[in-house]
Image 1: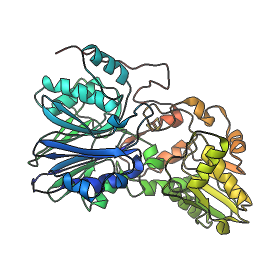
Image 2 (image 1 turned 90 degrees about the vertical axis):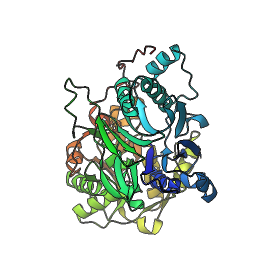
Image 3 (image 1 turned 135 degrees about the horizontal axis):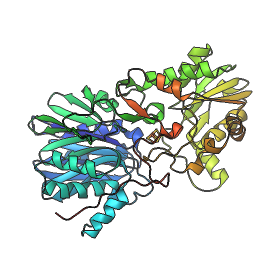
Image 4 (image 1 turned 45 degrees about the vertical axis):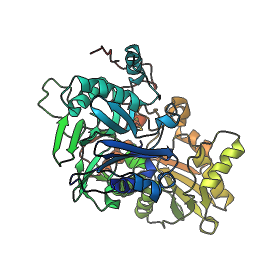
Length: 476
Ligand code: SF4
């Protein structure tokens, strides 16, 4: 679920769109912290700067000054476990027969290995094990036998199976693509002559840009450097003139924890949906407590809604160290606990002697929650009740978001009572899937909720024995 941002100055003023891209990608940092990169197009000549680490650590004034151009694309990247090495850092650049191409993408391509093998059999070479390189290789071949980039992308979408959002930068255009399921968000925005594509609206707000609209599921939107905008739609139905509209299934975890609270995805405010989910959770699982706190940061809005509904005070009890990344450090139990302690600090004066209800966005493995409950008890909490603003995660994600192994999911085999016991809470309650969906007010498409109900709308691969159709590619 990397953060993607692209911009193109249709007035082609001499300038530095890299700074616009920098602030865009910076605003999407929450979607991926492993690497950051920006590529620019300066009259058909491409330059890129990318490295591991956070956006702010990867760029400075000098670097941004050298990235001159009238279009840019960037990524704040969350890599999958197979996508290792510096060559995998995005944007990925290639020189094809159609000229320079840069790609920022967030994808889980289910038939990636089949396509890679068939391309290798035709002599293709790869420098990385990323989906993006396979997509670019396919695109490049498709471009040779199509009239334009949009047609080549359309054919590539037919070849690949899976979920993705992508921003291509060609020598003349910026092209945004949302997968036919609409599982990953992508929006269009504008500020004066600069058009923007972004994973979330929060980046547009940060740049004081106007939100134009969400890309529709299966849409390819193309913005030329002269300001011409065209839309093409992927459609695998018989009647290709009938475009798909609003039948997408955005990942429900965008609303639960992935997206920033100030973003709006497919018509539903992330913040409002979280507050409403918290209220619904309170109706389903009320709690006799003295103080409601959120697990920072993604549990805060739901905690506010929960407290509002039960009429109890909402306050701070846990602080998150913003300079600590992920906590799944391998090693001993003590090391893991220390890592969680580095990430969360307890406000002892607010907690001591009180019955605490902590609202979290979700419970996947439960390891962090268990440690947090211990810290709260060590800090003097009389009772610790846990409420979760999403249902029990019983199924792994095949699309690169959550744990991909069913054995990592306690809810798959354990009852609520057994999980409560495992994490050491006084009580435990999950919001129902129906209430969670009802809380997404204003949403104008469906949601993928496979983690909760096992309904894998885009097919399954590594998380089941069922395989997807592979592309048998023939030489042109
Ligand atoms: Fe999101 Fe779960 Fe669907 Fe994956 S399976 S896309 S995490 S809802």
